[in-house]
Length: 64
Image (tube, rainbow, N blue to C red; front, side, top):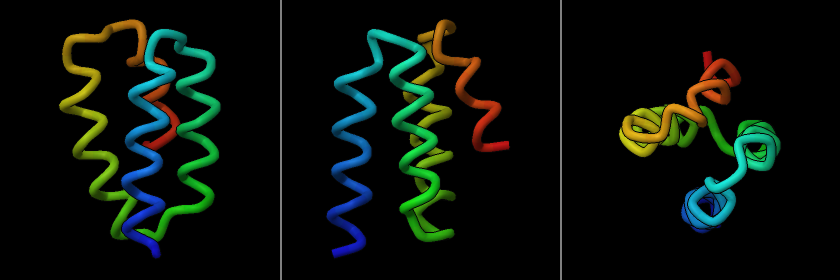
């Protein structure tokens, strides 16, 4: 079940990546729901996903 939530989070974040406000909001929700090891995986994914999306860098402060 937990892995399904992680995959769902990735799907949602990809879909809202066009808007940095929505992206930050959904990222905040995800950080409240996911387990600690999933947050580490999400951090790795975020660094790769936002590498070419400078408008989403502002959301990275939520995971630091």
